[in-house]
Structures are given as C-alpha cells and as structure tokens.
Length: 285
Image 1 (cartoon, helix red, strand yellow):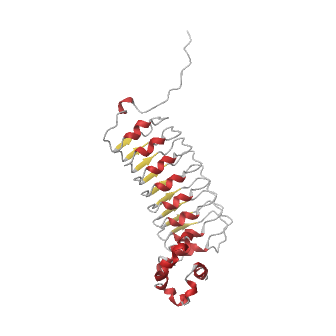
Image 2: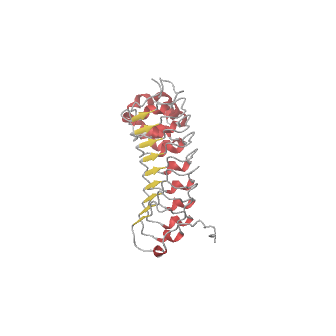
Image 3: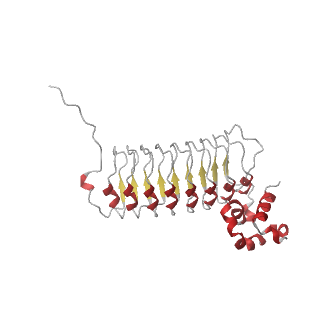
C-alpha cells in the first residue's frame, strides 16, 4: 500500500510559548522557522530577539509591538523586505539583517533614532534610503557585498558614525556630504567602480583607516584625508550638509572663531554664496 504524498510542514514557534511573559531575551537561532507569529510581538519586555539561521521570508507587521527591543538579529534568512513598522522600534540599538535577499531598506528605518549598529551586508541593495541620515546615534554602518551604486546625500548627517564599510559594491561616486563624517575612523570602499572622490574627503581624519583599493578607474592622485576638521571643527558640517545652509546666521560666531577669520573679513561672506566660496577655498591646495 503506497503512502500518501507528504505535506511540507511549516515550522513555527512552539505552542507553549504563545503566552506573553517577562522574558528579556528570546533565542530562536537555527530552528528552521519559516514564520514568526504575531504573538511573539506581544513580549513587550523583550530586549534581544535572535532569529538568525532560519527560513523567514518576512517579519510580521506587529514587530513594532516590541517597544523595548534593543537588539534584533535576523541574519541568514530569506527576507525580501523589512516591514515599515520596524521604524517603531525606537529603542533598538543593533540591527543585523545581513545575508538575506533584501533589495531595499524601508524609509521608516529613519525612525530608529537610538540605533548604533546596522549590519545589512550580503543582500541585493541598490541604494540606501535618504532617511538613513536621521540615525544620528549610528556608529557602525556595515553594508559590503551589495549592489549599491551611490550613497545618499543625507549620509553627512551621521555625525557620530565611526565605521563605514561599503566594499564590494557598485559605487561610482561619493556624495560631497561625506566630508561631514568628522568622527569617522574607518572608511572601506575597496572593490567598487569609483572614478573620483569628492574634495570633501580632505576634511576627514588623516589617521583614519582609509581603503579605496581595487577601484581600477580611480586616479592615483585622488583627494586624501587631511584632517582639516581639527582646525575648522563644526564649520565642516555647516559646509557639507546642504540643510545647514538654512541656518547659517546662527553659525556666524562659529565662522568668526576659526583660523579663517582673516579670510572672512567681508560681511558678504556670511550668506549662502559666501559659504560656498569658503568651501571652494578649503578645497584649494
């Protein structure tokens, strides 16, 4: 007697876990999960959720119910997108979504105002959302092995970023605003298609680990970090982030307190056109 064809069973969280409790950490690593039920998102005291090494194709919309979550690891799954509701995880400090099939990150990711570490390597990302510039507490952005063709202008708003890894992508250029990352300690851009670097690279730290190897079309005399930030301080962000032009009047005392005071003798320099002139001046050898 032949057996009936077997049905492929969907692995879910055990029924015994259906009742929300006071757990702070939930480890479901490598449990063959294909679905994360909504009731997991009722663990309102949960701080760390481990979902790596499973077969998840999506996260539930109710993920924003984990209002106290600080760490979310969903490395090595089959995720094709992240829900917009992920922006509600305002206490999240670490997000690892590497090794999936993501083609984009949601704009809502800008709502993760306390995020310090973002891992999104080994996906199919072609761009990063402009909202990423709102992550003012971000210290590490790790996105190698994607298909990124450019970085958003808003990246200059990541004033606390210390490590930026974008190697093995398809980058052809960098935004001028990258010069605003004055706290950057590591910048790895090897294995891209860069043809030139913006002059604002000179405002980055000269003691920074700086790797632009394996960019065949990049001239050998490209701009290099020169630590201009040590003497110019907050002025750099004023000149690199376009949005700052709108509040230049409040920054006039900063300009006058820099070593460029003799260059700033004319009041006409304290407007948008004047700031552009200063920026051009700083880029001169």
